[in-house]
Length: 337
Image (cartoon, rainbow, N blue to C red):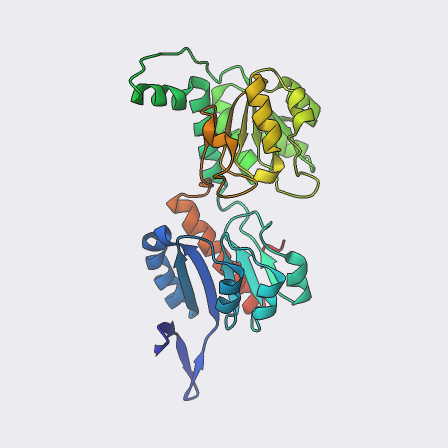
């Protein structure tokens, strides 16, 4: 070990010479330190890399990221915006990997310009997100959030809810999360429709899913659950026109990305009664402290915690490090995006 400016460098002795090994920057929220520190210590020992781990309560700004990447070979990205300036500052940077799936915070064109491989961690958090979605769906069916709020305010007002059995669930997106959610939904006796840009009939049959168009999902679904990637083609795919075609009183869930749903259109649809409730873990602007969603209890709002389970965090972190290690050791990009 060599200590330098509060940093610990791992070194190897080769032919009597000490050589500094590859270094990976990892930026994580402070509240994950207790969960990931033992894992990172063991992983550093196993792979012989140095981990420059930064724990913060808020995402780093561009200048701070530029300074942090100046002397590293790889970068495990969380919520920071990784701009062209960051890639320009990373003189040794060869690989970045996003903890999770969505890479809309990474300038991939700039990455290509500077020869940096970009990867993500597909499937690593699908179980966590699917479990959260199912839990919210069940809670919406029984209006648990509002009943809890009533009771806290000393209002005893039982309500009659409904069961999932016999209902129709429309999935916008049938990737890893959509498939896992379909698997969890099967025992409830629901009809499952799915919209996907790349339909796979064999896969649909395995999960008890029927592919449908956006219009068909809007017209037939009691619950609409969003699991699409955020792309130019999917931005605001759930908009006023789409919502006008839904069953009156539909329930909408968004566990994907805020930009996929037009928040103004969602808000208006709830006010009109076209949508009964919205559960969202994501927003177009985060944190959404100026959003009208915060003022209406028909919106179940969460602070982007879909992947926030101990199991998913460690799986994502391990996969991100694997992705970077594969590039740095000449084995190629395992999950390019």
